[in-house]
Amino acid sequence: MEIQDEVFDAEVMGEQLKKLRKSLNLSQERFAERMGMSKDTIYNYEKGKTAIPHDLIKRLCQDFDVSADYFYFEKDKPLREGECIDIRDAFSRELEACTDFEKQQLMEMLKILRMKPVAV
Image 1 (cartoon, rainbow, N blue to C red):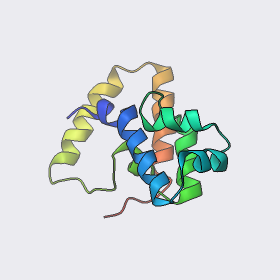
Image 2: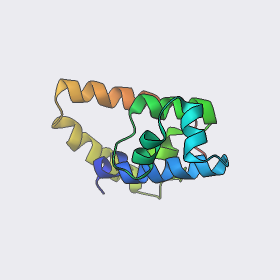
Image 3: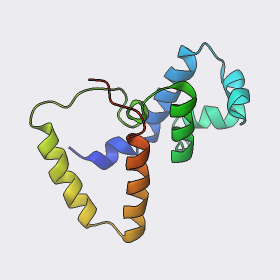
Image 4: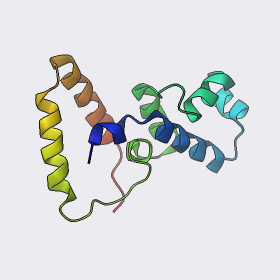
């Protein structure tokens, strides 16, 4: 299981943004107005053409009371038995290959992910 692909998939995150917007019964235009950005920006996020910045994920989580897991992992889902160990091993291997700057970025992402409790 490759964590990196799952975490940084712009298309998955864009689809989740679209689901959130639709759950609020907002058009792209109205959602863009509410967020203070252009309709084209929302379109590009939803289509995965542009990655959603982490600071925007944080804002979406705060404004709409969703967990960051909603965006990064598609939904709040529990880990299957044994999967946690696999994730730790994979994460450890990936972390060893990171630069100091990348490690700082990861710490910021972890802080964002821990903002909302994960539904079990």
